[in-house]
Amino acid sequence: MRTKTFDKPHSHDAEWYKDRQAVDHINQFQHRPRLLNAHFLVDEILKSEQIESLADFGCGNGGLMREIQSANPDLKIWGYDLCPANVEEAKGRGSDVELIDFVLESDLKYPQLVVCTEVLEHLVDPDAFLKKLLDNGVRYVIASSPNYETPIDHEEYHLWVFQGDSYADMFSEVGYEVIKHEKSVFQFVVAKRKD
Image: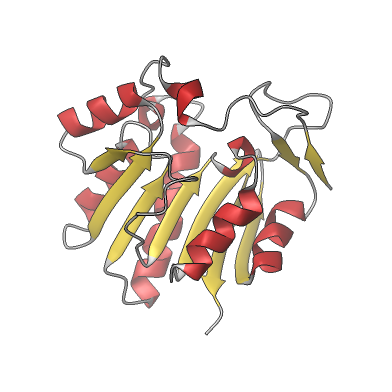
């Protein structure tokens, strides 16, 4: 079951993020395992597919991007984030990150592989975002979302709660083929563009 947790959107746009502090998720104990799993899933795709470009939508301070780049120096990697403090820190660490509202902006570079961990539950219309990726030629999407939230007990700034298979179903409904749906504390989807 998928549950809308808002009447009025409150955490989906650049204005909401403008005064927030940078967060180093890659080095936080509660987030590092999730991000390392995303890295593992990226590596699985890179072993079997010829992928030349990856973008992290909602990349934070670029920690996951730096880990992936370190293991794959020839891969073209960039990221987008809505929080100015994250972007400033990412650039200071040498990451190619743009401060941009990737939901509303139409002039984006699209890669072959998109990573978006803990992003879709923040968006007013996550289906439209996934459709935008599909329509712009993104071959693979690796995404994660909490798997422990309920309609009553969830982060106050999450606009959606995904239970059961609703997270994977969202990818299928816009036209991606779900090739993996892992569920533990967080749920991960690996989706592939249908050829």
